[in-house]
Image 1 (tube, rainbow, N blue to C red):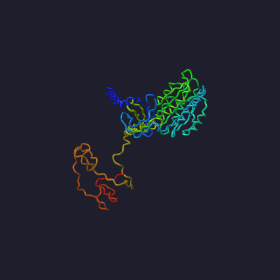
Image 2 (image 1 turned 90 degrees about the vertical axis):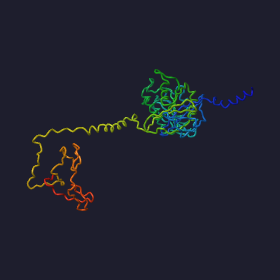
Image 3 (image 1 turned 60 degrees about the vertical axis):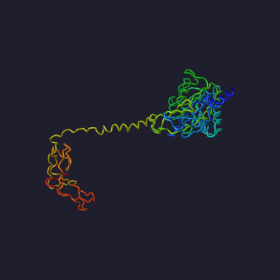
Length: 449
């Protein structure tokens, strides 16, 4: 009996690791379509404890775009992709309270201390206006010196600073991270500071600008929570900034937690997976594409992007107006072409032209611009007597009756130069170009001008 229990235990051992595996969860942190139709996804994968899950292979991921499965063309494991980060630090006058500016500087130093070779970081400090303290660099000593130069003063312009941070990152290749730290509200919305100390742009404009550039925001609220009647962190606004752009929001009531938070954010960014595929619908149509990513059977993570190569009329009303002009012209042109001209009133009897031209003055001659011979009789239909459109017509255009065949016994005219036959009434030979002799006027015919 003991041997049988031992045998059963040994048989169950291979199945135990499968049940012991921690549940994984994935999140699409950035969709890079700058090389469309090649699309790169940055995916964060964590275990049940929230720790980054490393060691995954390309076969562990399943991706679909608009419901259509796609194959990976490139796979970069966790920790192998360089990261470009813009640290956006609030340096308004309120950051001097309880030395919050010192806590923010310590957190920024902790982030810089975890940079890897290939990572680049920029520092933007803002009060009433954003100011770039340090351009993107991989040099840690330069960044640490720039962090030490940040001093609190002035108002709070969060929305303008978000736009400045997006602009600083938009030309960076690969993973781009925008990390915003603030302890208050934009003076544009706050009752505790003048409006001129706040942003020129609105919250919606800042969100729309970041979304159109595909830039998620990591937002940290530091200090007391605010409200309509007192200063402090407006969490509803900061959460909307993060969630509407595909980022995350974090709250730190004191500066003691900031350094650890920045270290964790840095580690999470560095452990993301980069997955590249070619869009199954590579059309430049300006449409939205929905993405689903599954990892080892875990619940699928979602992402999206908009194909931006089509002209975005919403972004520039002038472009829309210029595109509208030719469209309106194409719509109005047919009606203008078919517009009826005004009908002249019937001429009076005195204005009517005489039935026959007046005789030429004595001594004058009529010289036509070129010899034109009018036949004595206009050919008419043998059935309805309607005038035929041309001599020799086989059918009447009015009643459709067949006409007798033209008399082919008439004498043909030949070119004096090359001897080729000429068409009736031709002035030049179509073969050699020689001038044809003008035939004599037929009996009863008269030259005209």
